[in-house]
Length: 286
Image 1 (cartoon, rainbow, N blue to C red):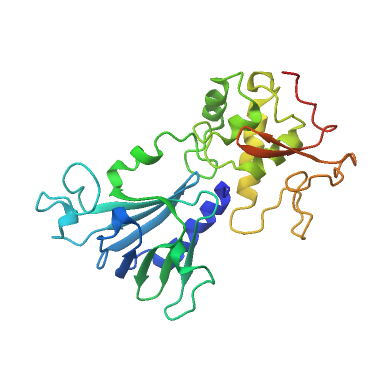
Image 2 (image 1 turned 90 degrees about the horizontal axis):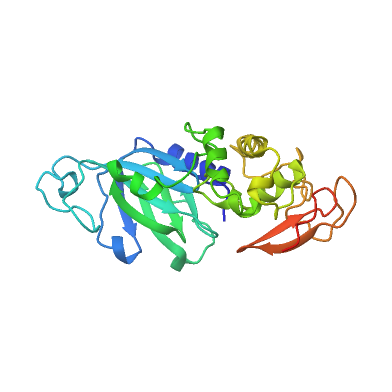
């Protein structure tokens, strides 16, 4: 699953390509939005919230979508139109991606059946591949999709004290699983989970209640994500050279960069975990 900095970078790509533009066409290739036409709509901004992408648009005055005739303007369930401000929400999960192209530019070599939406403007074409949770809702209702998320590590609402409070609610949960729970803090993925816990010297199997410094852990996570904002190569070591960007993630059986012990890999919950058995205390017995 993409990390929060990858989603942040993707939002910036769409911001540069579409912000302020009036759409000249749209093509939705998902059943729930197949009849939706955003031609004439204006893109106000592209934003990220944790791992969620929010493309905010304004419908032309007088269209059914602005609620002026009291009828639903988009294929969503319940209620009349939601005013002129709408949000196209998407989630990348493991394999989703947005790409922006110049008009006439050849699109990426991905199978056409993976395309979920195409948004066209005079100066750019945005293509969403294998997107998940694609929905068009009134901007005023965004909280119905992202309101459950914890503080966003790359957002203006970042609040380490609130993140610590949420983590501490479940002291028996493993810290490895708790960091991935987006209800605690939004943006940490498997890479940063493994790297943060290595740098803090904490076993991924340690119960949250036994982690000596939760505040230091979440603060380090935020610093690592922020350091990688604006670039696609993620590094926690300070090096951007191939094979040198991580301490433990993706390095099973390779020597630990600190002590030389072979890095281990094992499943924790639904995700694999990498850790050093010497630099990070062994997991407690069941």
